[in-house]
Length: 500
Image (cartoon, rainbow, N blue to C red; front, side):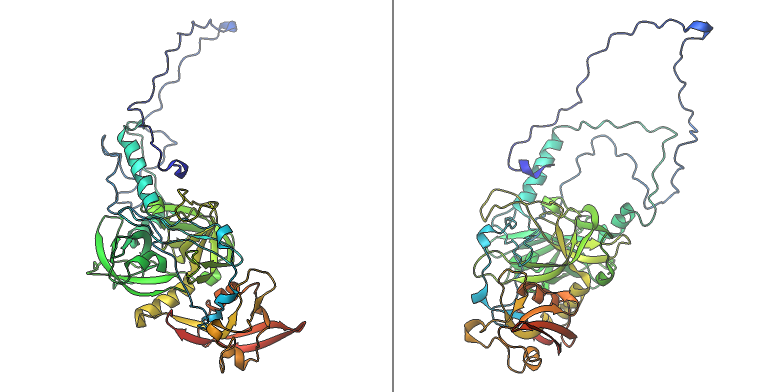
């Protein structure tokens, strides 16, 4: 189904495939010279075909299901039309000292010319917030809503016109396919029951949907902050499993800067199966990836790809002048990620979670209110699970995020020379926090930070994203330039609690 045709009527499918005109009967062929007999048709294959696949053992969980009786298609619609990112994640307020805090006065992004995903309104009333801007890279939050619901409706209506699929009859030689453990089918089979479609709605009826996955047996679900943002302050939140069971949920904690949130099911079932968490630090470029989500409202969709890059600096906001920002040093994947995938798991080939799908680079340049729909062009971004796990544990424990920081305000101007410490912080505050990590290390306004440990720093957002991959108390090496000379110092990261 092409999203390019969303909103346009789709002609119903014919109730039966067209019948080709009858071909004239072929004239009888003369017998071959030399006394050879005329060619005879081949006899039918015996029931015991030596090349047929062996029958699947009884009870095989990966065996293909038997043919459904005629009339069972289309399947019933999902309980909730998904629309992924409910709103844009946000991060540190200007001058607060997150990571390296940023100076709003020095933020000079050209929002008008930056591609970002059009926010998708909920199927019911309003429009969810979404969009993504970046320092070195501009991507879009994979939000969904009206577009997803509409896409599903069109597909459903087309199916109702009659299926053109012709089912072959099953004979004694037909067998079921066995799907071995470790295949994509086996990974999907095991992971799907632990993923949910999340619906978030504000008190005014605005909202969106996204995806999440089971974190523990107590009913905690990990997702993106911007997926649940609309449900904060008295809104509604529900989570629906692939079997159709829906549960009311509540937000345990959310981190705008990290774009991570944890929700908890009310009256969770006793048979929850948390997904295994992998090690995102050990991921290599070229590793296989599997993404699960609800693109354009199609819940429980599985797509595949590879890790295209690591440590990709991405900053997100809703594109407005007053918006805060979230930052990630992301895993880049070419697995198809679309509006509706936000908050869903990015799995490795063993089925372990290595990231949380959060954003896409979109070819769409339409702004707010545009009728265009952003979609996958093979550039998707996920929050590394090592970082997300740390954040989720803090949110479950205290309800508030904890951020590492160096205690210095840096410019967010787009560039490649490094992260420059500003002359002053926001609101006239000091650019270098007195007694903070940067101050103790001897950093001063005007210094340009070019490396953090072995990571090259080309901008303020890149520095913030790298700092937030660490935890408070970690020791890091900072390389900076001052007056044409390069210096290296070691500092211990400080901490900041909360998003304010």
